[in-house]
Length: 171
Image (cartoon, rainbow, N blue to C red; front, side, top):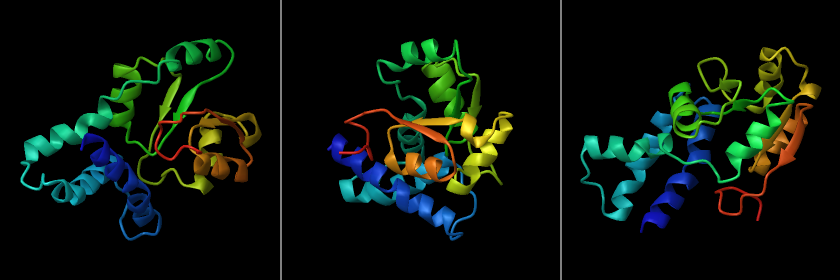
């Protein structure tokens, strides 16, 4: 059941983000989107009676994710030559917990989502300028083809990382 719940939860992400992109929902923290999705699917799994404290703990799983086994070593090598930062829809608290505190990724910067700068395709070049870099000097490395397509459309270089077990990875 845990794998089915995880899959249903992740499958709700793009529809929830589309609600934000379309303006149906205003800017919404990813933690709150995750909770909205979770609340919607729990009854399907017979868990509709979970209390708020249990739901909050379950929703916090996104803050407690471990990195892929090769990530820390790879980033450590890369950061000797390049500036590394996150481009994420995640709110800063989520990114600080998952990437800095839990995973100790050692990034130069954590760039999350906040009002006025959501991770929409048109905002990718603007985010590069926050690093004092032109879009052509920025490379987006990702396991999601839609993110890479959006980055390429904005003039960013891209690199695909194969993660066969990652939801949304190319099959």
